[in-house]
Length: 448
Image (cartoon, rainbow, N blue to C red; front, top):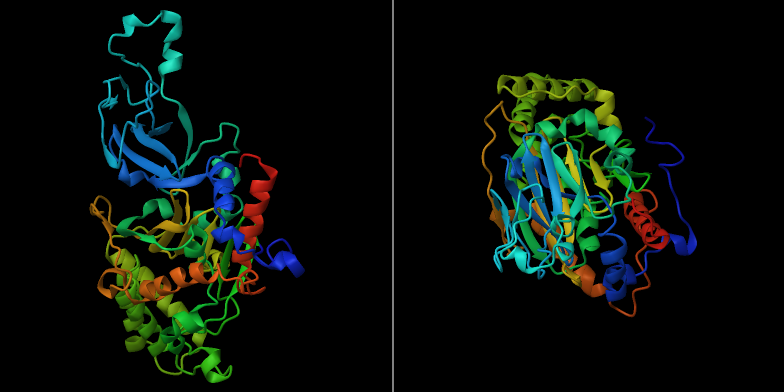
């Protein structure tokens, strides 16, 4: 794979390089998304581990649509529109388990596969007015990838594999399906779902929003588009553990070992992402066991070796991935339309943003950590919520710094002095590619 292909190095000029504020604040644009995007695009609903047993269900909500995702067999998951065909009541809410899907209004009920409708006093209808075909629950397309369950409400859509290409080829070697929840948290943010998502779709903001990180990382990134998807990475930055070139005038840091330790300890303390245990342990070993003056590449190779050794000592399955594949994947992927992930060999940090009903000024924001566990030892993780966006104990410093921006961005975009967003043409390609892809999707009106 060539991340530096002409397709990946997309560029826009003039008006094409500006994102209109209406994409974020206009109720009419939100209505277009409700019909032209969310009812026709593949979107992540849940993870398979949330519905582990036959009969377990997850109720997925998007704008004004509600979908039942339910395990109907040991290796079968189906989805249905969450509505009773009698008088329109929803059948499920939240997560749970069902022997049959049951309407609490008049008692109509179905097998978990949406068939075998049982109707109270069915004999009172004419047979031709109430056939089983009329009464079976309306199915929704389901796809599964890397432990996630995706749904698409458009019967004529492409396959999930087609939708995920070409990003899937970069991400499959990480064996994300072998990871489980480490923690998961959600909140309501006072901003459009795209504002929230874009706070995690580029690394350009680190030098200001997370300036404390410049002491152990060179923050300059490159961003590339891959169809509707995109990623960014630190391919031409100074080695991890170096102070930012913004602080040194471009001079490399001689000894990167303390910086690697500080970086990993800081990430563990402020994000507690899935691979924290392995990376902190490995970083401390690097400082203790690798001699000063060791070339940077050798230090980083030792760091990777120590992560691998510690993971195996804990009984974790290491993915079949090469250093080249890890390097090509970069650090952060945006899967169109609303899923972002930062990957590692033993863990992942993920984000999802969804509209809050039809309100363009609010969104539901989910953040979660996945990690590897020894076989059979993955814990049951509770889904936590908080509306205190300044609570560092709950969210960690980095997320509270990001949250501090988003409501102010939403407010600022309504100013008559704001002429549109102007993403950085090198470091924020993912942001502009997202909007150009979204606009094309809405304009072309096809299922994908």
